[in-house]
Figure 1 (cartoon, helix red, strand yellow):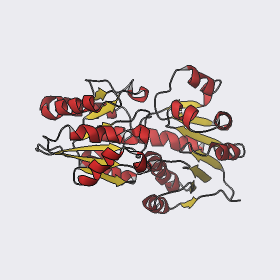
Figure 2 (cartoon, one colour):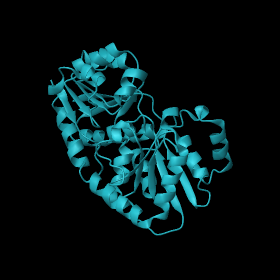
Figure 3 (cartoon, rainbow, N blue to C red):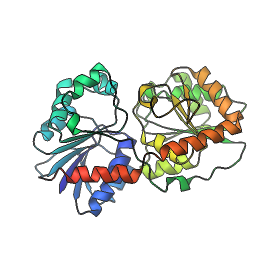
Figure 4 (tube, one colour):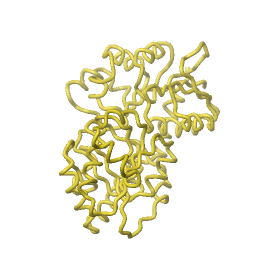
Length: 339
């Protein structure tokens, strides 16, 4: 099959999942073309599949469309009318309905799709119901799968220094500034903070937070976009995963960090409400409250038993989500699109 993979508007998680699936598809003899704008190291990862990348769809013939990131809905809706289509949905419905364009295009895209895969719990609100009314026979729900051997990447060690890591593009609603502000309240700890993700909104970060980062690059390290393998290597070097977003679906890095046995601290948002339970397999904190986040960080840093228990339970939770099952099912769905 000649498969067009749309990564329009993609962030690192979507690219990582699409290239992981691409390895399986190309190994089975399928030809992939990726549509989108990509950082240089993402282009290198795509080329290694081997696959090609396009910014615009040409007259090239394709057998199927795989929508791996929801950007450019009017373009995707037009293509989906012509090709059998599989859509992955990671974004929350708040993103889809309020932030990402014309409702009519999303409805058109979903109506024409042969299969729709939700990578997080489906929201059972009125907006969701209206958006997917009559589509239940097309819908599958699967959390992002972690590679089977990912736990071997990290070897926990006892040390006085703690590395804190977060993976999300720098955008206002990802709220990296909350973690920076919390870090400044914990100057009595030997901490370093690694922020993985495209630096799209550094200009929108509060000036005070930017100045803190500029003064202390050894403490607050923004590494920019990383491929899936690079992200996992950085996760493995740290001791605690924190996610501060005010609106989010399940990032791949949450599952990957859990599979490595990192203790998780997650914001109290809908996407994390079912599987991730405060005090059981993670700690939760309200968004836009650096004081609360700092207190929670202090508690987990000072309590070795709590840290160990959260590490064990996050790893146990991650075992429920097999990367082999996840990508194997996606391969079957993609191949099921063949005319």
